[in-house]
Length: 164
Image (cartoon, rainbow, N blue to C red; front, top):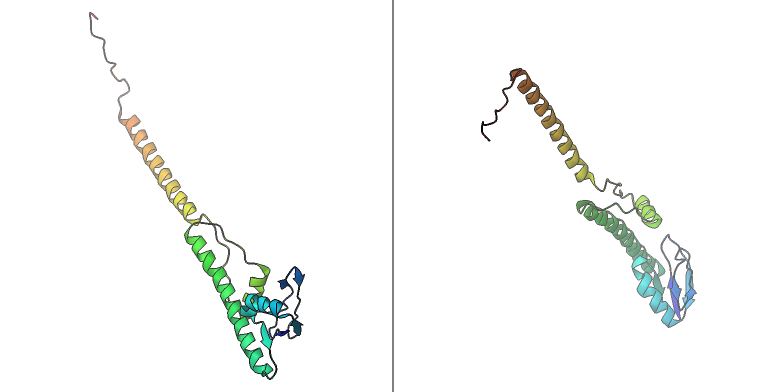
């Protein structure tokens, strides 16, 4: 049997082993079979889940678990921001953060990237093109109005050759 310990400030409600849920609230312990404990430690160890053995100093183990949990939360927020920066550069849509990542960012005081316009560059290009077309249209109208004023009223028509 393995004694699992959750020293973090979050509840591990979604831990599963063999189709069975193993809930572990913050600051609590649960004793599980070896295979179950090893599986859960492999999956939740990065989030701060710890094992306690006879003679372990609980404060030291808890401190290590809290440190791993803090690093995990920073990594999750950082990865979300990084993915959205890459998506923005590729012209792809913004992906909203999950509720969990949002709560991590609020807890740690790390800023989340704000939603952006996916086609921001295209809109800028279209605006430049619209301005160019409008200025060219004005120039053509000006040239046409000058041409009409300069042309004589009667323009001689080309004559047909006789005999044909």
